[in-house]
Amino acid sequence: MKSGSRNKSRSAPFSGGLFQNGILVRQCCSIAEFEACVRLEREVWQSADIDVVPIPLFVVASRTGGQVLGAYQGDHLVGFTMALAGWRNRKPLLHSHMTAVSAAHRNLGIGRQLKLFQRADALSRGISLIEWTFDPLVTKNAYFNFMRLGAIARCYAPNAYGITTSPLHAALPTDRLLAEWRTNSPRVTRALAGKPATPKFDKKTVRISIPAELEGLKTANPEKAARIQAEIRTQFIQSFAKNYAATSIARTAAGVDYILEPWKGSAADSAWGGQQNEG
Image 1 (cartoon, helix red, strand yellow):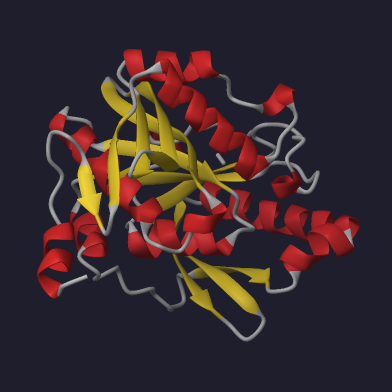
Image 2: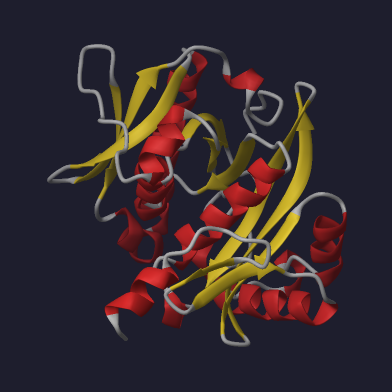
């Protein structure tokens, strides 16, 4: 591909979607498109029917102020995001419930492209908050959320969705952090420009460590993995109760540390009703 073509591929969102590097992100509207989303959902999560988000919910999301966004390579769906419309403190929000990218198309920036279009669509409708849950044990997602997007987390939801049938969850409680993405904030704007907030390391900072071997323990020693998860759960809940926010992560010799800072406002202002109960 010529350099001129590459430059053209980095275009801004437009009415038909966002086109970058041969991938078009756009709104999904038809039953056939929702069926393709569910097929990709099954491929990624490999869940039993009881845990599969069905086509009618995609229909409802798209018709009631939410979003169903598809990432297409030609006519082939390679990724999607589904978000539900919400309301909190007299303001609208989007709860981004599911994002999936096919195995053959990961690490190509498609997840970020979906988020960029999701943000552009939200801002065009006057929606300044998008939230979603993510597994605190999957630190790759934490890096993306905090460092690439500029989100923060102030709520920990133990076993948010119950024990699921997906192999990705390894029969562990589905503990989740709730990401808050203030879509037009200076923090988010800087992160999207490649200038994320610098992690703080001072006396007020709290660090929560995720050992590097934890992912392997999920299958090799699930009981030990569950014990470590419980310890991490306690640390997050205690810190959030003191009005800390998870704002970044840092790699260590032993794994990855979450960096938590004192934060103005309580989690009840931004979380699931302040409950201590995606992904």
